[in-house]
Picture 1: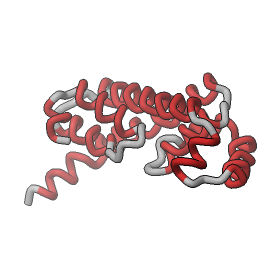
Picture 2: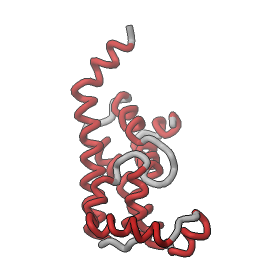
Picture 3: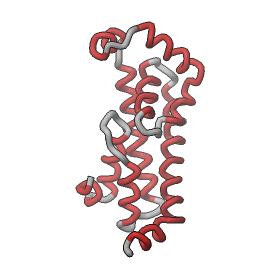
Length: 155
């Protein structure tokens, strides 16, 4: 992850993109690292949000390409189990995209939205809002407490 921080905003974009796919990675830590290195409080969350959002849309698209038979064959997931999950996706629809920022399950939500062919544009907008709010939260948290925490940890 250090090499991504060395690349600055490009590294943040790449790391945020990868974190929104099935690659286990923390874009939050990378974002805070950029802020510690002197990154802009405005540009940093915009870059992180853009990368993470495009990564989430990639996960949506991978789900969109998915087929029932593949899930049964390669992952051992039965069609009846997929039908049970579909009830929840039908109930909440594109609003699930607001939760795509969550660790672990967020990627699953993005893939499921694509797999069940939930409206793309609504899902994309809710995904952008959810991911954007997440990074704004981290910037606000860092701006309020970051310097004090770093000062304490130096002693």
